[in-house]
Length: 215
Image: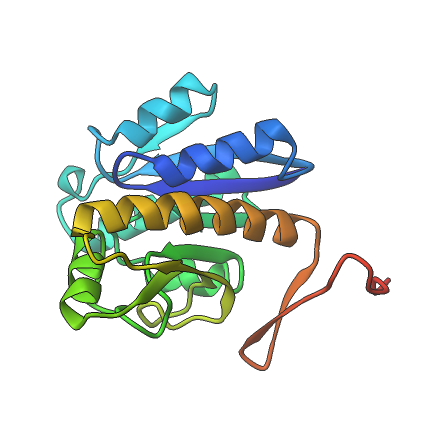
């Protein structure tokens, strides 16, 4: 069974999409072994508990400095022994030690078509505010592996979403989630769990279903 740990900060809609994907069989032979949040009030932790998934909180407020928080976060991940770590709206800078230990085993969902509207300061509604301010006609979401940069890791999958003239940041955010994020995040996890994703020379390669599998 492929083991995933999901890191969250907010409402957990992407977490719910993963839970549903596992339950409905879109993500096969996979279990969510732990959900880790940095905010005790995050509804995502409640979603996990309701689904019978272990939910733990590792909050920076509970530690005297960042170094000790980083150690606790790494320990919380290690205890779950995951094959893959999924950042589903996790608004925390990962410790370098965690990124190094789980190289090419951490993925993130970002609400834009990277390299547009990404990097430091671009998260949540700020991404959609920037897209509307720029006047783009198409936006979307990206799933990528995590490296030491901010939204700079190898791209696994992207999906475009049209911007409507009447859009507000809130309506655009919701549509990007519904039409892109909730689709490509579970799909990416399913591909990785099936052993069909690899990183070669900094780029992602995906083995198609009808391709000859490497033994």
